[in-house]
Image (cartoon, rainbow, N blue to C red):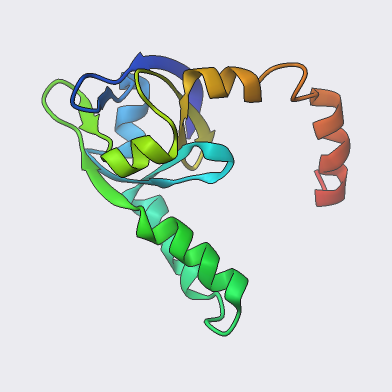
Length: 143
């Protein structure tokens, strides 16, 4: 399971170190794509295959479904860990997530999220997120 929060910096070529604690679960090759809330999503090959299967079940006749599939698949790239434990984030994905230097990688169970550090601080701030409010909303989902 992918968990934790890790701060790293992009190098001049757009490479990012994959935290050692996450490397084993992600594998040597994995998929990075546009994510929700302005971050990037990273999936292991296995989790990406699961996600793709779910996307395939969406009806082509539904515009929202087509938009959803396009959003995730059009920006997806396969990344590979180099000998120094780094991987390259494509320039279009860096631009989408507003990544220039400092980033935060978080594990959220079945995927990674890669955030611009400043954007993560705002998103994760007490003014933006209330654990009590989130817990109350989760009762609607049966949790």
